[in-house]
Image (cartoon, rainbow, N blue to C red):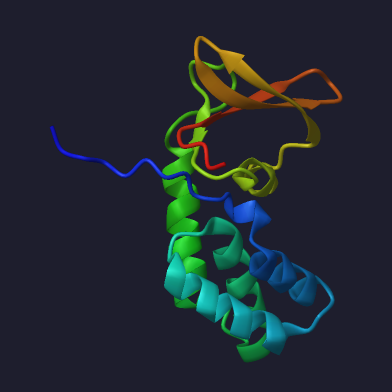
Length: 145
């Protein structure tokens, strides 16, 4: 049997550089946010949060809203949403990073809040609920510690 490295990876949501990038972008310090984002995206070209903020910064700085990072982000979001509709735990939307659920609710137009993380039949879920009682399930397919 092959040896597999099972060393846990830290969740992207705890990366201080990523958080700094988000703060810079939200405070309209777009060049600084772009520079941080370009370094982060080299390390992980599929990080949804970084792709969202980097494409937003490039869109505002260069007027190019259809940049390659936006197109990559759009393709990733479409692929994630293809995994399920989120209406039940069985048809949950599969995510791999803590925090991606919070990003995806915006794309879905879901108006609700995260109510809990749940373990259902040995699987981990992030459960969201709207004020009308509609639930939205995200299943963590990888848990990063």
